Length: 99
Image (cartoon, rainbow, N blue to C red):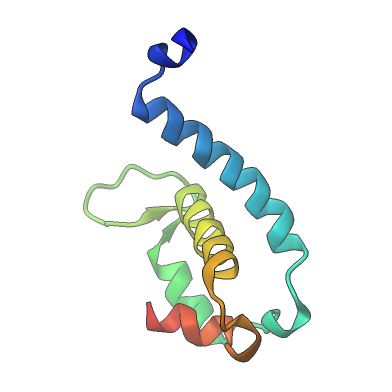
């Protein structure tokens, strides 16, 4: 039990997030077909306008790094699938737009 004294909360959280990311990857690839609807062009354009795909360091624009966006989106989808008890009657797209 003394080994646990060496870990800080930040270490435990980082470990949990690493595991969650790996589980989310497999869960998202096995998502039910009813959730696999194409994005509208308007939604695609909105996403493209807020994402920094190139890693530019232009401080004038407040863009989200692409990797951070993908990770946040994976976590959102995974957590939605994990905790929503009414999932059979709910559209993921509608739920995403609500939050």
